[in-house]
Length: 415
Image 1 (cartoon, one colour):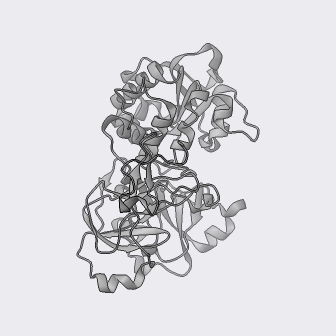
Image 2 (cartoon, helix red, strand yellow):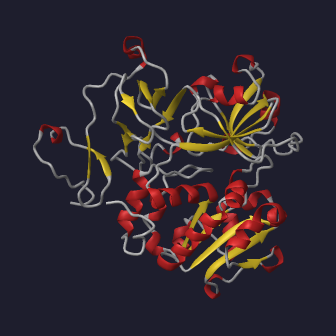
Image 3 (cartoon, helix red, strand yellow):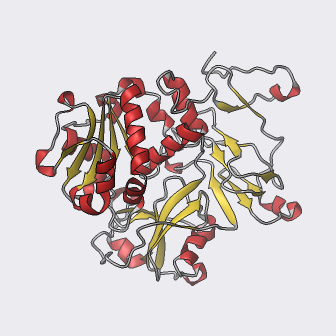
């Protein structure tokens, strides 16, 4: 019971949100919140804002996606305007217009606003708008961007409370792929920068260890010094990674891995442990502006994209066991039922090497189950799953269901 681009007009809100949940889509930057939670309120919004700001000086993910997939975005915007919202606003920086936005403008019949024309009047606009802002780092924050572009002030509110849905460019790309061809999120675009020989722009499987990213940038993880910090995020907004690099797996919100000097970090740590080294060094170096593919031998797929939301977001429930063979795209965990949650999928063919309460490890190499058993969480039994016959959500089946008591199941939200 999934929604596609072809039946978008007839789809109800629940089915649309469930399709995104089953595809495992989470915010591809920032908080990494499960995307379906926003789309569950799509009937409350009339306007969609695509955050195309990409303020970090070493980021090219969104700019590259928009430039190389302009026709895809144009098609998606048209379908959304026909079936879902009245206004779509793409917000980019004016300094990126010539290099990165001409294909987007050429593929669309958008009304263009320059910085001096903002804010627009959302009540008097419809269709597609491209709004160019000045070069201000904080414009990448959705609350600030909404105020600057549309004059919408959020006061302890979510954008949906004011009739807006906000998504970044990579997340929109993942939503399109889920609706167009049923593709789940198995890969992530990510940069590597800081104290590494090369800046890298990579397409990697979700769960790729930080150690593999470092090696791809010419830095051995064994050579990291005690006075260096590994951070998840860009120069202006990142957080220290605790533990060795081989134990950190790329999440669906990881845009960049940085190696920083500890003294630099200590001098530039703000509230909530946010690190801002934007002005601590010159980030204008040779940059890769289009991605190359990295294929690690092993991935550590997190069961929750951002553990910081543990009180709101439930980890997914693993369906696999150590030694089990999985294929690329196969679902390896279903959404948890005790909170907002997403499914997770295998990014490549391989063998399950470990299953814990925080992640699933998949290896391209054969796994010695006897050796692997020492690093897995003990499970009483396999987790069985089914699809709700009402909403189509993938869920863990009740313990009795796999015994043949019923062939049809309705989840508790649909009863």
